[in-house]
Length: 152
Image 1 (spheres, rainbow, N blue to C red):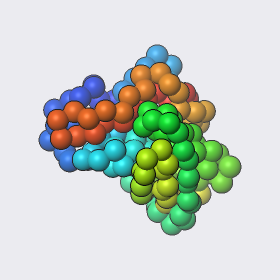
Image 2 (image 1 turned 180 degrees about the vertical axis):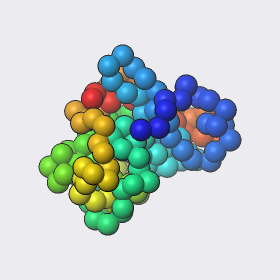
Image 3 (image 1 turned 90 degrees about the horizontal axis):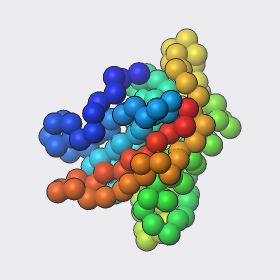
Image 4 (image 1 turned 90 degrees about the vertical axis):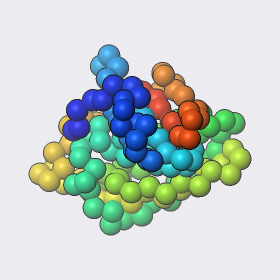
């Protein structure tokens, strides 16, 4: 698992899209950023995978469609991440590639991944769910940032 990075480090401002993890008591914070809310959501999904394993080790072999709806971007982020967690748990998958489209209050997306291989992926923890703690989706300069705490 990548080392936690402090909030809004220098690399946050230099990369066009990316993610980072930040510690939160017994849980883990995930933060994604990019030029659009969609990219920030995709990167938050990648950060969530990084809580479990190195996303580079996950092959994008199987596509899963995700649909959710919520009254605002923050609640939509929680719904998106919880939909990914549900798919990970019920299909025994890890994801490494994401595609998100947000139209109004609706999100349609896809996640690509593969079945968990304990030897190759060495999963560190099991994710229980995305929470409302430290939940924020906002624009800062030219970047959208999407973050929340993941219950592990």
